[in-house]
Length: 202
Ligand SMILES: N[C@@H](CCC(=O)N[C@@H](CS)C(=O)NCC(=O)O)C(=O)O
Image (tube, rainbow, N blue to C red):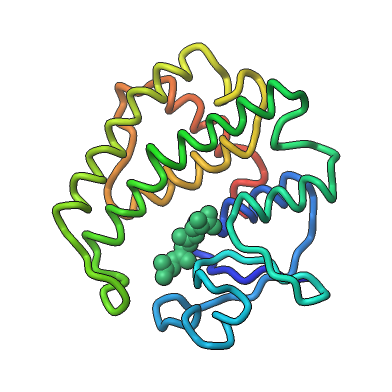
């Protein structure tokens, strides 16, 4: 099996860190997004959304969507679970995962796509929307900081895929100059801890 991805993008990094945490080795195929390699008919046949990462199994089955790929490996390799250990924890992980995706990662992505013009050959950037998205992403730091005042990780003392998502999104947000400022001390304390894990460099 192999994963099609690009080393610099945040969603593939979520999968790489997830697999590193689980100790799973993987073959990666680098896809050049800038030149539109993900948009070719051969790639579309495997992955109709054209977004990366996607996983191709040995029988040719392809699985797209970062969380779906992680779910596959979580089910295949249940040791060291990252998506929750109990029904309650599974629900809490999913809650934080969705919050971080919708309230931070997605607006950061919108800010990047609509202000940088990086994909202007395949979409219509709306700069104002990009700026508002960036402001919305920054505003979410306050909520995260409040939550992390009482919690070591997003879900209590349990490091999970939700932390991986937030970490990758915060690192990518630097590209559009969105960073937690010093006032967000609890968020920064969390960031220091998760970025010190060996999987960080994956
Ligand atoms: N919902 C997808 C989003 C994947 C995604 O947006 N990937 C970006 C890279 S991080 C991409 O492929 N961008 C290329 C494009 O938009 O053309 C997931 O969770 O995997």
